[in-house]
Image 1 (cartoon, rainbow, N blue to C red):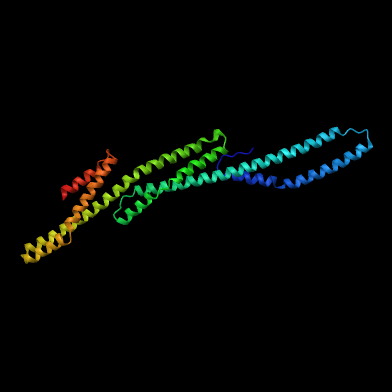
Image 2 (cartoon, one colour):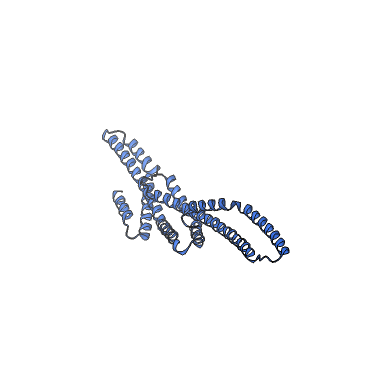
Length: 271
């Protein structure tokens, strides 16, 4: 017996087998037409001879014609059902694949630990900013089309798959803004620590120069150039302001997670 469940490949295999078997339908139909003509000629000859009952023969011939018509009509119906099922399975699996691939990529990006360039942050922003809600709509629609092909007792796996992907989709999208805030925070945090290293190095150089009793005016000029003209202090304070903003926004979204607040407090104390 034919079945529409089991996935695209299983249904396609049945369709191929079905089409191969019924590919000679026209040949057998022509044989039946020829057989009917021969039979009618025989009946005419018998009728002319008279006194011969052809009722049983007529009934058998009619039964054969009816069976052939029934089989060929049902073969066409099942071929259409199988073709529709193949199409529905293909469309559903394709939507399922697109969303699964996106979710996998999203989870990989969220789990990245070392993100220290603005370019990487921008890549994440673009990725999470170009979410195509149409994908979920298409998934639901293709799932419904597929379920329409299947008996009710074979629909549960399709429903489960859609519900699982929808749940994961919502989970990832709800976390995406938090992820981006953390990225921005960590980027400024990295920049802050780089500045601190530069400042400590500069102070150490100036301290050594002072200890060696080098020209104080030269040391002061160097100090002014580094801390004032280059705007290092202003840039560091801007980093801290940015981190405070990200930490506050993050806490507003995720009150139970205090990690960024703790980090920015530590940085403020260090500064």
